[in-house]
Amino acid sequence: MNTWLSIDGLSLTEGGTRIIADVSLTLGAQRTVVLGPNGAGKSTLLRLIHDLLHPSTGVLYWPRPLSQAMVFQRPVMLRTTALTNVIYGLKLKGFKTGEARRRAQESLARVGLEHLALRPARLLSGGEQQRVALARAWALEPELLILDEPTASLDPASSREVERIIGDIAASGARILMTTHNLGQARRIAEDIVFIDRGRIVEQTPVAQFFKLPQTPAAQSFLQEEMP
Image (cartoon, rainbow, N blue to C red; front, side, top):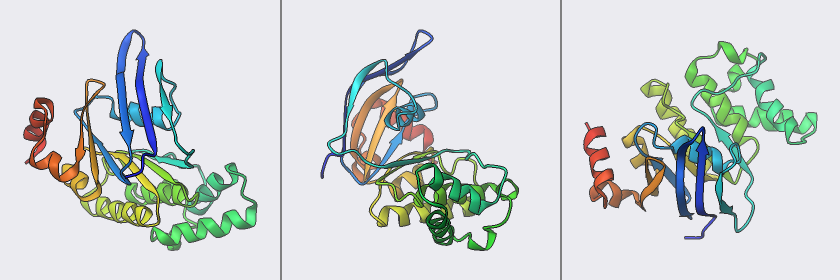
């Protein structure tokens, strides 16, 4: 397993509150899921990795810089068509109009939304908007796709479709780093589980081992509370 990110002593303090506390972590699996209770620091950790937040202390070391894209729980849609939403992300990265349109059309087709390409994005359902967000990210061909609770607001059918797309993106070679509250989803997607509690990394282990025999009381308690 090749390391693609090493984190050493990462902390974030805001307003006198320590949100992330002395995190040291090595990531090497292709598909990593971060689990933990509400308020544990999962989303903050992802934002630090994606450079949307800057740590108070600590270092993120990338053995090789990876192109990245991030998809959030509630995607931001521009007041324009689904196609133009995807094109916009490509234009920001410097793609010329013709190439951006071609990539956007291909990406919408991959997520099954080519028939809605000219529909106003904000009139789409929540599941369709999330698929547009995934198309916007996938069109960039990221080496690392970061996903923050991508199905938290979706119905089961839409969640399954989003999972399928995440699997296809992983199959294309991208690394996946995501958070979820859906333990079944974590089992299906993850190779590696990182468990965070109160801003600290408590456990990191292969997915089967985590669900069969968690090593820490905090993880054991979390699974007992969350498992049906």
